[in-house]
Image (cartoon, rainbow, N blue to C red):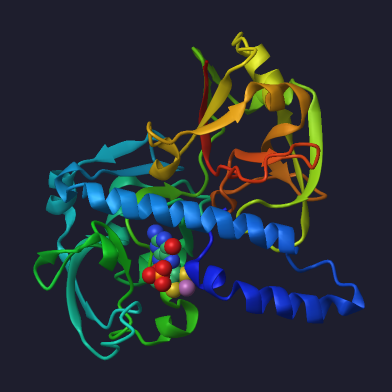
Length: 341
Ligand SMILES: Nc1nc2c(c(=O)[nH]1)N[C@H]1C(S)=C(S)[C@@H](COP(=O)(O)O)O[C@H]1N2
Ligand SMILES: [Mo]
């Protein structure tokens, strides 16, 4: 659902191109409606980031959570002081996001992701790690590269905390200058800004609904639905219609004994902090929850694979075409539902 501003800027061009390219009847391109949704979402996100910048969350209030298929499987939240103590690695490199000073070498100091993986461990089936950012952007990297290269979560650049508009307080930095082969694999889109969560592999399904905590077995007992829709966020999914399988939100609320308020809302909380701004929560009108297919998806595709972290899993919010909710985001990493009058 996050959209890179580049796409927003190039929107007329992209619509034009897809119009031309699709004269032959292709279905693989996002529709103008879809692009419009993405554009609106991008504008809303950017406005949010600007608002948050204005508030200037101080680095000292910043947290990083390590979670997923770690040795214990229990999320661990590190505060700024703890992060600083782990930031023992210097990487001197050009910065993929410096378009003006392309050649300039910065001295980044940060936490080696390999060190986090050694400290917190990973299950033997883990092949990748997903970095989830404040603004719901996410980047997934293979475990092998994270173990092979000093890829760091940088906290300082040339001895100073990294500004928000430079990717701070926690900026995923690649040692491009020492390992130029990385330039072939990872471009600036992999340099994640304001990373809040390191998800090792994929988390287990765990959904807080009212006072109940539901797992995959609970959800699998409910009536199953399949939507075939273009996914409402971009990262991790191909364009075009995708099969998403899951359960209706109204059934989930009923299972947990949470009554749907007749005129109120369901508030959806997802992992990325931008979804959880108390001043601007993601709310779904109860009427829609009752009448259309608002789905919590846990599987996708013909073979019903579990949705991995790289696709915003294990639970993502999805709207059926019978929902008129175009301006609302499809929330990634859904963690909790509450209701509000
Ligand atoms: N948290 C976060 N990190 C991000 C992005 C983003 O939108 N959010 N954009 C990525 C992309 S696509 C690029 S090219 C660079 C620069 O993004 P910018 O042009 O929006 O500054 O940051 C990368 N890291
Ligand atoms: Mo980008």
